[in-house]
Length: 411
Image 1 (spheres, helix red, strand yellow):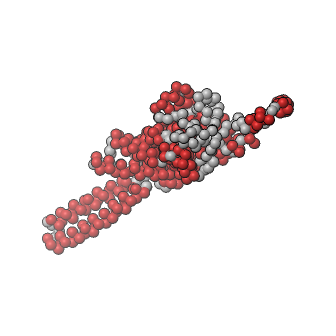
Image 2 (cartoon, helix red, strand yellow):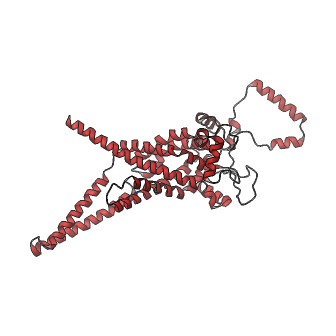
């Protein structure tokens, strides 16, 4: 049970105790005065009926569905929400991780149209959908399976979710293979190639880059999302006057809860995206694949000949040429100032606070809220889809279980 529910139960229990004491006092007074009849008896009877109704409501509220039902319903709902608007998440990632100053992707509509026109749907707007799917279902299954312990749920799911998030984010940022329209610093052929390349060049633990940033984004997001959702659900039930608030209000409460939580945690999402989409240049040279001995001799001879005939200026310019390996530079120049040379500043940190300070110093508050438009829409639609489908499948599984128990009893 969530913190909000526990607090409401605490105050409801206190109210019930007060009502019980009042009913006993009223019953005693009426017995002494008029033998349990009259106005005092009617008040006591009304209070007792109200107390029984409160206890019945809380007994229904305290009944939690089986963990297996939570895991199945959560997995289906969460995965459906993630996959439904993956293209919006791609637009958000491009806006947050764009290293160019001024950024190539500005408004949400123009970014969406540009990616669609230049790169298409499968490798453009839906780039990274395979690792997203591979991480979404087990991640949401684990999350809803440990939903009773909210923060433990995010921590448990992160071990599966973070590697898929790293792969997804990099593939979303690069777009299509050999993308001529956007230079992100990455050029993976596929999800499998991305996995092998990252492990070979950067090490296995590079798949967990941004682990802390992901937790610091997801834990506040989940807390805010479900706090908003439960409060809005309570208000909707009071307004309607019954537990079933209807499909429209179910969608509205879930979508607004996710959207508000998404906007508030947008700065943490920006830091997470930038940490996960930069590479460690120091890890790259030693990890380059070796070439054959014949090709190596040929290259060696060519280099010796070039070195003998090259001028000092040529050698100097050659030494300062950036390596051809993929290096993800994060530009930190302000859009309001002159553009610095690419790679002049790199986000060499895994610290959330340091990242927030650096982004604010160089880009201002606007840098914290890069991609806030698509993030708001994505979290709204994702939360609405996930929570509505979660409730729907819980009801379906409960009905199926009751029907199976009834059949077993009849047999």
